[in-house]
Amino acid sequence: MRITAIDVCPLTGATVDGGWPQGHEPQENLHTLLIVRTDTEHVGYGSCFTSGALVAGAVELLWPLLRGESAVEPERVTENLRQSSFWQGRGGTVEHAISGIDIALWDLMGKACGQPVSRLLGGNYRTAIKPYGSMLFDEPEPLQRSLASVTERGFRAIKLGWRPFGRRDRKFDELLVRTARETVGEDVDLMVDAGGSEQFWPHGTNWARNTASMLADYGIVWFEEPLPPDDLAGFVELTRVSPVPIASGEVLTRRQSFQPWIEQRAVDILQPDCTKCGGLTESRRIAQTAADHNIQVVPHGWNTAVGLAADLQFSAAIPVARYVEYLTPCAYIDELTTEPFAIDADGFLAIPDRPGLGIEIDTDRLKRFCPEPIAFS
Image 1 (tube, rainbow, N blue to C red):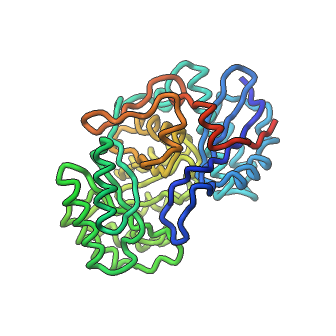
Image 2: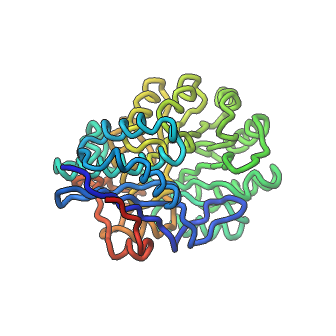
Image 3: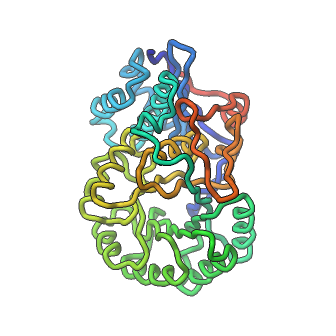
């Protein structure tokens, strides 16, 4: 099975606000799907957390290395892309595009073998996992309404992130967390994401330590990105003293970038994003190294249906996986597949067991969000 073409599909029309100060409009393009076509009837789907224009530029760079390549050797093919684009890539947009290609090639290999990707990654440790509804903080009253809506959809774990948390004062931060806990009760897991990767993040280790102490009083499962993502030393110090687990890693790309975080125990929970860090291939390598150092792995996924499907397959193959992130509400997840993802009565999400990523993209629905793909052949 050989690669014959790639379609780059920027998604627009239903983009969810990501929490940055400037906000995001529905027509903005933050996510891109890739469709890898072959000389057989099989196609593979990948997802990149990057705009279509950047992905198209990266694919143009990589296409001479991909044309005619094997469609069922994801680890070798994507490592060749990584090594061969070293001087123009080594992270950033090129690695994001490689991530989408890698996911698509795993999808293709699963379809060619008639097996779910999780089995090809090493085997299934579980058939279902708890998703956490991922959403933004808000003012107390609209926050209550949003939380009620998320729990009504069946979620038994919720992560709240970014503005206005950490942007006013400590008293207001505690009001938000107390509001959330009182709204959902004690039986719903709550996580807090400070959003320290926002530009010009003003807080340091002392703020993060004091805030973590407050979060511990409300049974918060983890405290995510309380510091800028380049403050490795700050994370090491914070993780050592925090009363709640510290999580980070979503902005890192390539397994080598994760090594100092793992070796220095800079976090309790590492969060590789397979649509950015190098795909399922790199995510598996990162997870194995983290597990060897007794560090928990929970994949980051501000995502699409393809990205969520990849996270589910990945999480099935991780021995100690606990959660998967589920951006909600999000049309790019809920309206792209022929069969919707469904949360059961216990708040768990079944991991698809069909070949490849286990989902089928509705091509007519995809045209709604991407009427004109950028084709390479």
